[in-house]
Length: 272
Image 1 (cartoon, rainbow, N blue to C red):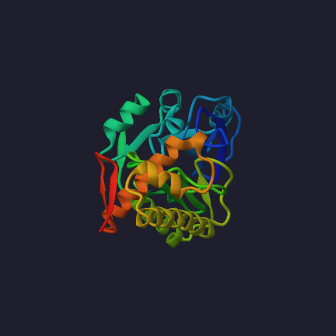
Image 2: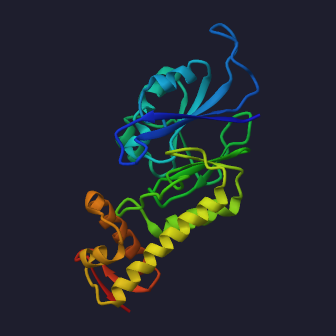
């Protein structure tokens, strides 16, 4: 029976929790039998750093595979250390080997694609979920989906240009919603026990922001800075750069949808 254990680890991150969730997916029915006995087989996901919290868990397991949901620094800092200490097979997204190496310092042993099923006792399958990052994936188990930074139980997720793609993020949320998982295991914060409602909440939040941006444009706002001032109804001084990159990601989506014309070089917008 598949078991998933969440291990929050303190990292240098912009997220309010200040922690990234590492996970172990235990894929065998064995129980830990002491230092000289058997150990359950497991997959280590998103180790943000070497940390005693992770060490205490993996020391009682046979970690056979290491994966990350995406290669942002707060999700990969422990890959190199745990690859060495566990001798596990390290995986990355097909076509993203160079990016993986540059962020982890590790050459992966294997690559996966959409639909890849990992060679473990229980069914563990890869889902493409780009949007937050171009190499972002989900890891689907029988008891839920490890969704990385696609969803959070509270608040919203940063989708910022150039690494993020808002159009892809909308698709990722709808895809998670359609798969009807029992729960979602996010990259930050608590396990999400109401995944479909959470996906809809996040989608509606983005749609509302998009509506505000379009309202600003129809009101003759033509620059990113002007749109930024009108699209947010709260003080964004402390997160202005993040908000600006989010607005750009929305404008890129609206341009791709054919609803506006957005010049990525001049950062100017016009209605169509």
